[in-house]
Length: 203
Image (cartoon, rainbow, N blue to C red):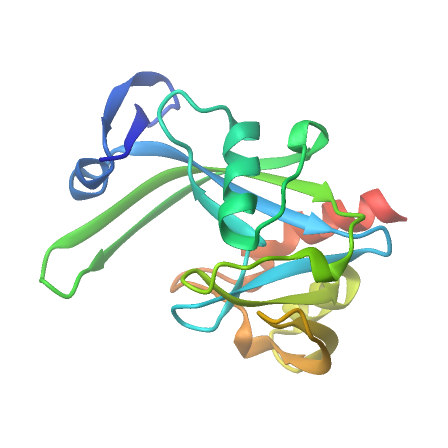
């Protein structure tokens, strides 16, 4: 069973615990949100396999004893099949995340995470992605500026490219409704800092 480092509400380390207990008790832990962008200012959103919504390039828990950089590299490798050196990834923010949801068996899944958000420049070929179909059903590439404007309006479409599991590249319109936004959040709050950071780094 995977173990996670756990923290108090102030982010102070207090020990380790099994992942299922972390979520049954609602213990604070760390996650990593990995974002890739290219030099033209486009951002890679993962098309999630479970709901088909667009989210971080990859993301996941930081295992016990693991550094943020190690977790970034592992999640990118596991979900989209790239071997990257994330030592030069740019820090965006640490975002406390708190949400409870009822599972199918009636139990409560309690999420209390410090999301460590980083962006990293990707200069490789789009055909190099080897996505895990258990996790990912594709990637969507959009200009950070266009996405920021879309999230400010909260409706409409923008031009983008979808990279399929077979690494085909399809030009299409990306609708605002495709982006993952949880209840009580806005797309601008959820993704704005990342998009602004990419714009800053590429202009």
